[in-house]
Image 1 (cartoon, rainbow, N blue to C red):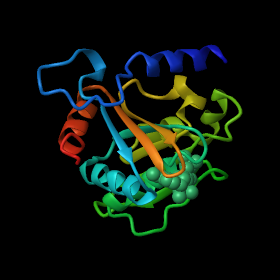
Image 2 (tube, rainbow, N blue to C red):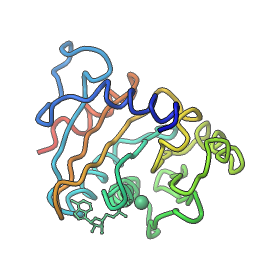
Image 3 (cartoon, rainbow, N blue to C red):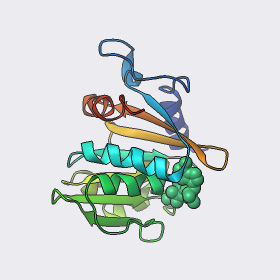
Length: 191
Ligand SMILES: Nc1ncnc2c1ncn2[C@@H]1O[C@H](COP(=O)(O)OP(=O)(O)O)[C@@H](O)[C@H]1O
Ligand SMILES: [Mg+2]
């Protein structure tokens, strides 16, 4: 694994808590995992519903990084996020285009980026990743590990893990005050 990959793994592992960990009440917990939330999804529909709940809470400039193997449900979750933002177009994987842009009900864009086919972190410059990240839209990135040095330190990391055919474990790890507030506001009361 590359040095960047190892650093990414360390960042991910360093804030991962047990599968049953709920949101900590305000004032409890330590460090960036304070508001970490884990949810077990039982179906694609449930994953999309979680995404929609999250999407309804998002603001322009929010950055969500989605990790997990092929078929984990990253695009499924993004379809829910888009629905929550009021996107009317069908959201499909940008695996070949790298980025798809959608109009949300609020008027600001949703940028759905998939870095699976990026060969090296330097390639992200050629399609202007930094401009999208600094823009006025919500940014959802699949395969962020491929461009870790170019991504902001503050973000909501969402790890999706396969748990059999239809179950997926979703782990939400906020990095920064905005994302801790987002998880607490949006996901801590999720059933
Ligand atoms: N609980 C679940 N959540 C999300 N997808 C699921 C779930 N159970 C089964 N699936 C299936 O897994 C696949 C996920 O595909 P996709 O969202 O494109 O994954 P990724 O973008 O991570 O490669 C779909 O075929 C979907 O029907
Ligand atoms: Mg995908």
